[in-house]
Image: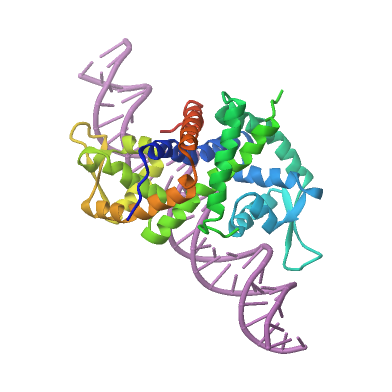
Length: 156
Length: 156
DNA sequence: CCGGAAAAGTTGAAGTATCAAGTGACTGAG
DNA sequence: CTCAGTCACTTGATACTTCAACTTTTCCGG
């Protein structure tokens, strides 16, 4: 027997679905327009910038960017062609691929960051109190946790 | 001068970005597996089921599903080929296209709904209190509102 | 050691989404 | 009345994502 959503749950589902469907495209749109890159491209560079020597493995980067290896591989191929990252085989284990952000990639990231951060602030955080931010954190962490333990689409 | 995010904002941004990147794919994955349709396909049928005579215009449906007309047009073409909807020219204004869900489409929607609702419940609502749901509603409505008034990607 | 299984990636094809350009229908200023 | 502009889509090309299959490398039980 199906357990339908309560009225309140349903009422909150519409805006949640809306955010899910529109937030990423909105970020894509700004980054595409101003920096000729996808939000996912940006995430890859941003995550690489946090790593020692701007270097990590494909699997680790896929984990940090919430992507499948396949998706990441295609995107890294593109970023490599643009000279923003380069691949190399790991010394330690020859089946591991290392990705490294180049100086050129870092310059691009630094140039894109202010506009992107401003967009995130203006689309999400402007007008939220500290408690709101704490609620947001708690709720999103909860949902993310449930997605990750659901086994759906679990190719990370 | 760029105003960066505070530590708390940044801490909440990661799970929010994670939800944004993984929730829709997770829903796609379940619906694809169990009902051979996309989450967006489902949304189109669900929104049509709320309309009088299961009929509305392309523009109205695009609005309700948060999609561009172009995207919707491609998808409706696909759904039409499967016999789940049909198009016709409006009597009132000959530049308006009406979309109507067929009985076959309704059957498909009814068959898909329980699994989809169960997935939404299990990924989002399981374990949330009433206050959590209220917080979620408030926060998502706020963000959605800001996205919609931002002018980014505003082709709806 | 050996051989099968699993891990880490890559690739090509198929499905989706976006972008820009085009079509036909209405509207309204002159 | 008319014709330039706008509206409501549609279409085709390009770009992105997913899926399934494959390669190479490593691990592990016997």
